Length: 163
Image (cartoon, rainbow, N blue to C red; front, side, top):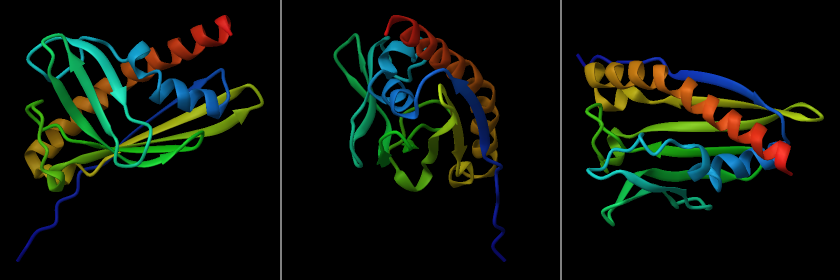
């Protein structure tokens, strides 16, 4: 008998003082301004973080040694509304291009008020990695996404004050 495993998704929310359109732009095109250079999986430090702006595009980091490290690929690109990217990283924090093992991250940008946006992030499908590695990754990103979303929110606040 095959046993189906299930690992709960990670869900995090942050409210930013900008429009959904601008929040989407800051999250995607502006990722290099808020994603920490210390959060890379390559052998060398991150020089730049990039999300290519189309379905099928890569989410990757350019490293100081000239290498590119793929984090995942854009599965859904709906500007101002929704972004879904694969997370092609093993539970040991190494690149893993085997799509059947990839978890995924969905980010939604919803009007909260006339001047703010609720950003809802769901990181899911950890069971694709297997029960133990999937739960390990889930626990690690559950602790990591709040700090990353805080950095994103601070960038959004800073951008609002300079525009």
